Image (cartoon, rainbow, N blue to C red):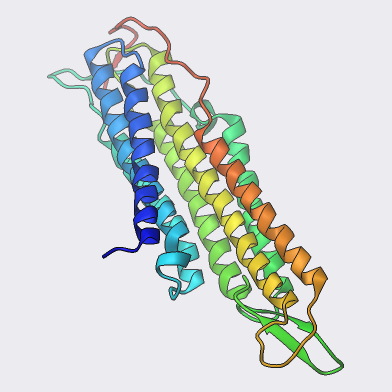
Amino acid sequence: MLRPVTVTLLVLLAIVTVTPVAVLIRDGRRSPAPSDVARRALRHVTFASTVAAASLAAVLAAVATVPVVAPALPGRVVALVPMAALLAYFAVLAVGELTLPRPTGPLREARVVRRSPADVAPVADRRLVQAWAATAVGTALTLALIASGPRSVSRPVGRYEMVTSAPFPGWLWALPAAATVGAALLAAEALTRLVAARSALTGVEEPWDLWLRRRVARRALRSTQLVFGLTVAGLLLVAGVGLRGLGGGGDGVQAAPESATHDSAGLALMVIALVVGMVALGVAVRPARDPAPECTPVLSSTVPR
């Protein structure tokens, strides 16, 4: 028999996984498409985004349940799972872009337009991703400098004595976190360039094709900032737990007086972690004010490939 806590976590996991699927499918059906090619492209992009988002949401929800269902798993390994899921998310979106419907027939035509990542990726979202990346790396390195060991933190309780508390995000956490954030940042940039450089859709006007590109790039950037934000929140949460343990006397190897300063600092970090996670989630799910333009099918302004 499953325990009530396990059943509750499984239900929450299912809700977190199904919710983005329902939102993306509904949004795809409501978006206007000016032609059959546009409708096929919209369905294709919606399917790729749905598969990617559902997988990413499931992994993030599963990581959140690890302290309850699998507390023995190494924390640094668990911390790297969301980044790996984000890279897989990019891969699914990239496959969706590379397999979009292409021109068919004996004479294939397409518009030739030079675009840059700035044309398809909202400036605010790009800057937010960069800010979160810098914050995640800075947080990881700062906590590593505070740590007394690869995964612990200590405080003196006498002239020669110290007490230690773990876990704490030391260098064993900081270096992998910084490396994976850098890799995810490069992957996000590569995906944005792919979206900007792919062939134009035939049978639709340029504004609608550009809107579809922005749609994919925006989702990728928002998911990236979500994972980066949750990484910051996770680091702060673990650090808060470690400091509170230190305030309570550390590892218990020897008697040590409690430290209200360390306990308060740990509690403050845990509260900040909750706020950071909620902010990242709120940014990821906020509605996009970018409605699809009303266009009519066009076949002009094309050049032979």
